[in-house]
Length: 297
Picture 1 (cartoon, helix red, strand yellow):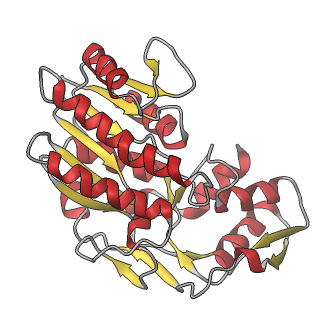
Picture 2 (cartoon, helix red, strand yellow; picture 1 turned 30 degrees about the horizontal axis):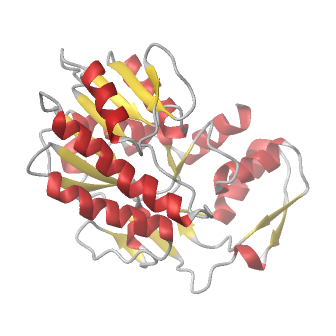
């Protein structure tokens, strides 16, 4: 992957799960990485609330990034503060784009992280031409965000991405895979889960960071891409792999509160639009390696 000489990147939400991995990956590739966070500050990390357009503008004007990757969001589907989900995910994104449009120059590329949650409960392989049908506030906030971003396509070079499920070291335990891994690491005898027979993508965060990097360096703009591998696993398979890694089996209790009504059996993304742009490097990653890294971390 050839990194251009003008290689300054700004990441919103840089201290989050994906942001940390992306910062490490981009730095290793030779990018000069800056970012914003609600919490921490350093010479390259700016404390900033994305609900303030002026704060975003001042930081962007100071850093003058060539590329912007927007990750800052309310990312937990079960988050209870519904108003905050829309404020951060929709208006925070608009603040960033309004700030970028005010700059005295145009960034080479702005990548906006949406979510595969915009599709809702559609069975099978999902492609970017399908009509989204979100079923929760998180997915709907991301769809509203996408619709509000599109008017900026003629002002800024923007790519919207819809990542499917992904995981890795450092993801919070209120997400499914870290919950399972943590139970095995702690040697717990039981775990409460929902339907363990459904099949979903569980990709590695490193796959996602590589996709994002290749997309910002591409010539593509004003478009939407699934970030997916098309490979699915059932929760039962994940549990079996964790049994092999840990050396013991855990008793699964199906908690009715975790079982969704009319839950679809298989959900995965189509890679037909993505891979012709960034190549197919799926074989570099596998779920066993990801789970082992998380278990040992």
